Length: 188
Image (cartoon, rainbow, N blue to C red; front, side, top):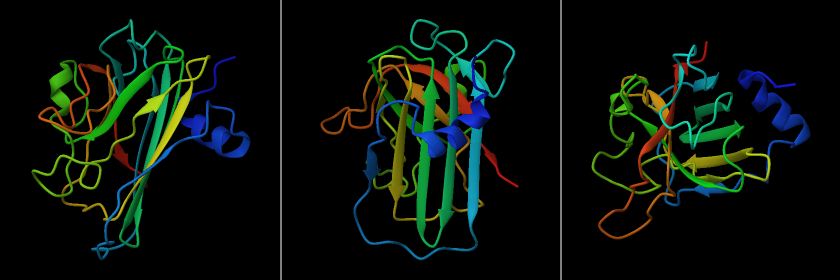
């Protein structure tokens, strides 16, 4: 029985059954002051042809029926983003980032990586959620950044890339082609 994507986060929190323990990808540096109240973004879906909020661009890397759920909570000058996936390729490393615009039929519709500090390509400014799936194709990842989301400039999607994120050199931040996209919405 497949679990609906929007329930993956709840089940994972309660049972820890969605893959190996999530690595915490924590950006170092001083915390910034929070510009306002708490804010939560979320997105969930099954990568089917009928779901326009969860789009697969590469069926070899994101098989029919794969699911993802992401939540980004911003409060007190800190943003914590958690991702849970199911049904991806087993034992595979994927690069994952927040992007500036919602998903679209064209993989480039999601725009570039979301950057808190414009022009800075690193995990302090961007949200990097790279993960490695387990033998069943499930995985999870968490990132904590020392800044709060700004309601006037929010990320619009989460993109799963074909390769791990390059952490240095001239290709820093690059993670291969866009394999799938999940649109984010402000949680009510």
